[in-house]
View 1 (tube, rainbow, N blue to C red):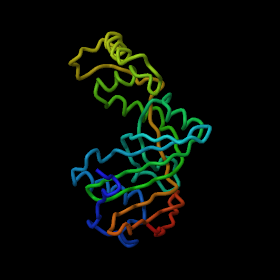
View 2 (cartoon, helix red, strand yellow):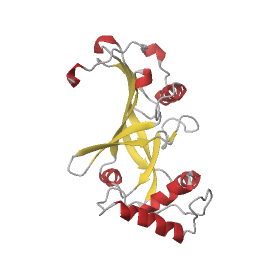
View 3 (cartoon, rainbow, N blue to C red):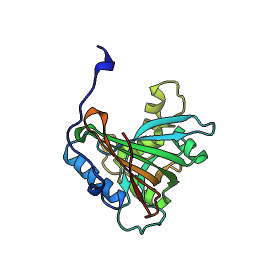
View 4 (cartoon, rainbow, N blue to C red):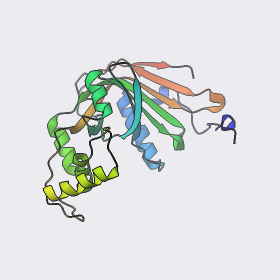
Length: 226
């Protein structure tokens, strides 16, 4: 198979400046709703790209767990895209050193891509506590069990940690409820966007790209060349 010959012609939709909401976060919410309705696989999956202290980039897929569209006035800290992870992971270390990051969603079912850039901040502890308490018991145990991004000798390390933690917190294997506190090294981040680009696939690779820049409720809308 010659992978250079693999290509898809995008014909599903168009995107004009008049099609997008004046608030790009509201526009995002609409696109996300459509991706969910289209049965997109993992519609909240987004690639998170960070940079370390030496300028080396890295990327991985994380899951969106919140987006602030209503309830926060323009310019307020907190309007943005939220995910949760281990603060001591590689991405956590990157963000502690250089707080700018980028996100990318891709919904092939809708022939759409969404690119976001901005400044990242930790969400308040009470917000992380609430989300952690809502997670399945096994996921809460997992947040304690994994020294994320560190080298380990084998999978046995993780499985032993998990068994030990179930004993520590007195959690049965089939438990649906348990009192497990949030680890101090685990919590949420929010990317407050300064740039959001909506990308709609078109034939001949002449895609539609509508970009919002500025942030803080003062957005400038531009069309970008494909």
